[in-house]
Image (cartoon, rainbow over all chains, first blue to last red; front, side, top):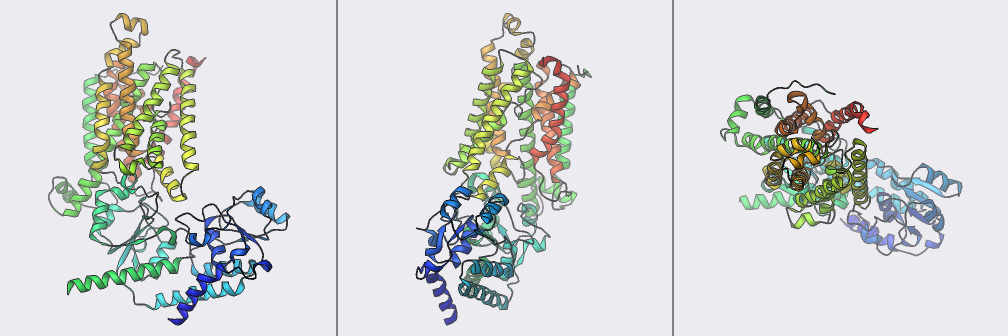
Amino acid sequence: MKLRAALIAASLFAPLKAFGSEALPSVVSLDYCADQYVLALGDAGQIKGLSRESRMPHSFYRDRAMGLPQTGASIEEILGIAPDVVVTTWGGGPRLFSHLRTQGIEVVRAPYEDSIAQVAANLTHVGAALDRVDRAQELADDLRLRQARLEAKPGLALTAAYLTPGGVTAGRGTTVDTTLRLAGFRTLGEEMALDGWPGFPLEQALRQPPDVFVTGFYDQPSAQEAHWSLARHASVRSLLQNHLRIDVPGRYLSCNGLFIVDAAELIRSQTDEALQREKEEAQ
Amino acid sequence: MMRSLNLDGRIVCLALATVIALCMFAALFVGPTSLGLAATFKALFGVGDPVTQMIVQELRLPRLLLGVAVGFSLGVSGAALQGLLRNPLADPGVVGVSASAGLGAVIAIYFGVATGFQFAIPLMAMGGALMATLALFALASRDASVLTLILAGIGINAMAAALTSLAFNFAPNPFTLQDMVMWMLGSLQNRSFTDIGLAGPFMAVGWLLMLGVGQGLAALSLGEDAAQSLGIDLRRLRLKVVLGTALSVGAAVSVCGAIGFVGLVVPHLARYLIGFSPRHLLLPSGLLGGLMILLADLLTRLPIWHAELRLGVVTAVVGAPFFLYVVVRTRGAMR
């Protein structure tokens, strides 16, 4: 517990520390997923530009992004900043990257993957480019430690279904499916052999309802569930009302991988609390 | 010119209504879960397993009813527009009425109007459709050539697409953008009686307005002067078609997204079956539209697709080659 508290404290204060930033390579990130790696690893003083979505509600570290400069992903803007390193997950493009490299700017890719091993590799890779190797190691170790703790917990013997306001669910091979399994659930994707991001299988769910609904992005201002999508359907509302529902803020789910453990911990703790409440009420 | 079988219109309508009823009944048994024939039939009448009842009554039945209503709206609108503009290529999709209705709905969603007022999307969609129909009429009614209509349609479609793209461009986040794009592709999946309650009354008023203009359209096919000499109030006739199209297409688009080419294809099929008089084309076109959507939606529900196939994609795949066929057949008139 003490180690966990120390790691959390370190993760909270380390990015804000400006000490020694003069010597660190300056960095620009091109999209909000790359922003998260830069905000997790970087020193505030070395961050010269974040994407324009870095302060949006779906940006996990949006609080850390407040007050930091933002930039677009055009050659002109980036050359104007002249950073040492540019980090990207999906922003920019081959033309931009080759131009930056000819100008001597290092382009670092943090691939959009859903495995914790890849996230740890991304942390190490970006950390090395930002000259924040120790910090990257600390975060990667913390990630693996928390993953191991979750995996050591007994399974819940419950099936969870993921649902967004747009009526999308998560199938096998997605980050959310991995997250739900890490939280101890069987998943709708596994049970119904769904892959990728299909529409929510309402008929099947009515026939064989999952035990728990994990809803994502319902906190976003743009979630027009009332008049827009499947989520307004009376049967969906009825399913959500009559089953345990764990609501996960969209910022935990918006970038593949980096917050798998945070999301899984949140889901697991809320589920455990809800099950405990149910048990107490039953007694 | 296309030949016609010159069948009796009443018999054709009766036959189409019977086929639609049979298809709807058969489609009740098609879905991602296998419910069984007897259980599905009993569930339709509120007997048996409550979950099966819910699936049949709250998922499958409204989807079928809404599909027929949307198809009817698009079919009648296509026939009425083709009659009013005396142009075989007039169709709510081709001339930009559907795209403008979609723009109205996107504006309602984008600015959050839809959150506080449940009729915002249908009303804005109908407003968009009305603007497009009025613009089309202003641009193409005097010079009834095919070319003018197509050019006016391209202009209206381009304007609606540009403004819709603007909304996509400034979408608050990638998730909303994906929602809007998928919705614009058209679908009847997971629609409910709430949707029918929202859009149905507007569609019905639109049908009533358009189904009553058959005589006027028949007279108009002889030319405006001849129609007026026959006692047709052209202003009233135009108003009914324009309002009827706006109400029915706008309401249809507001609940199902943009579904193109139905209004183009079905009046031609109706002409093939019963002849060329615009007077007798309206009801059969509506019924054929309903049948076309019903069958297209059934196709999207077959368990052979890797991902959900969108209804608007199916109608476009069928309709676009037909559009080219009609262009080839009528190209003489474009010169």
